[in-house]
Image (cartoon, rainbow, N blue to C red; front, side, top):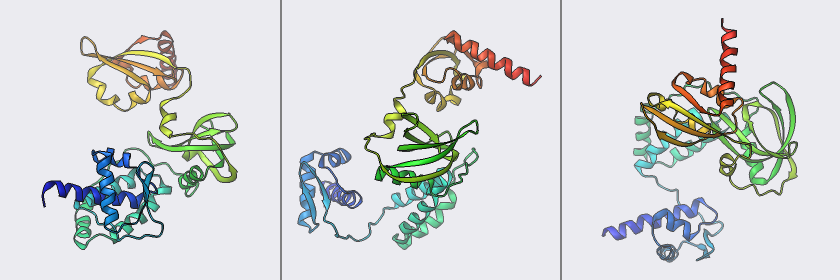
Length: 318
């Protein structure tokens, strides 16, 4: 069997896996995934049909497996098994506690269909992989809080939450969840808040109560990344000169605070340009962590705020 037919066999098998895992699969998406033409995908689907796989749909609209059709369990390659082990370690450290137990039972099902040799591979290698987590794990008062949120998104049901702010004030909100995201060791909901009539993000560990209502919401909110990238607040341009030797410590945080441009300057310095919405509080508090290695080029208001913080800190620790 030559290389062409081996590649086709791998691709056809992968297309069958896609059909098993998704309700609708478009030929255009498959062509992009496997870096082939759409016509090649049409021929691959025809190959599956000729092999007796009952595929519903047609070119241009999408394909799916006929309801009720069952296939034997999928077999995994050795490389896929190793990736499962690594992913399991990541989930143990970084997943929200309301998801971790569900992932664990899912992995047990995956292990049950592995060949004996692959199960031995897992036993031999899983203790050789570890993920070190340097942040304290947050604890929630509610069981299955994230699954409840995700169910509300899928079913388009409003949620009612009791929420504790950073100032320990408690309020009741009705929200229409867009999605969840993990950032700086905390899980957040991005949602439309009916009280504020605007989009807000809520830290999951500050939710004291949550319930899914029977009220449907009609808004089509798109993807969560649309809201993470396009905040509507007033932004301020900030320019800093920072010593190059500490840039490695700012890799993730500088993007969070709105980095738009980074250029080398003279004398071992780097000029950073930001567009930030947190000029009055968040940005100066972040800047103070490396202020002895930085010079503020603009705006003047940031210099004033930084000086106020330094005076306040100095007064508390004299």
